[in-house]
Length: 105
Image (cartoon, rainbow, N blue to C red; front, side, top):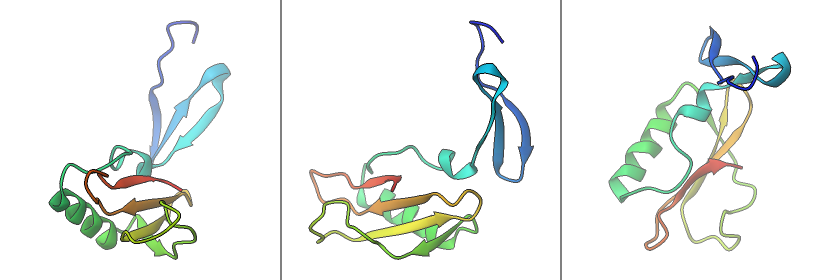
C-alpha cells in the first residue's frame, strides 16, 4: 500500500463495494452512498424526480420522520432506510433560497 495508496473497489457483491483501507482494513461502501451527491437541489423538478426515484426504488423503504431537519417543520420531509446497510437518509423539499437537502440522518 504505502504513501501512494488510492482507494480501489476490490470486490462487488450486490450493490455494495468492498474497499481496502489503511493497514489493509476492509470496509463496505453501500450503493446508497453513491446514489446522489449530498446536498440541495437546483430546482423543484429535480427534487420531484429524485423523490419519485426513491419512492419506487428497491434499495430504499420509507420510515417515519423522527425529527425534522429544520426542527420546526413546515417543509415536506421524508426519511428512507437502505435495505443493504441500514443507513437512514432524509430528503427535504426546497424552499428558496434553501435548496432542500439530501443527507444521512
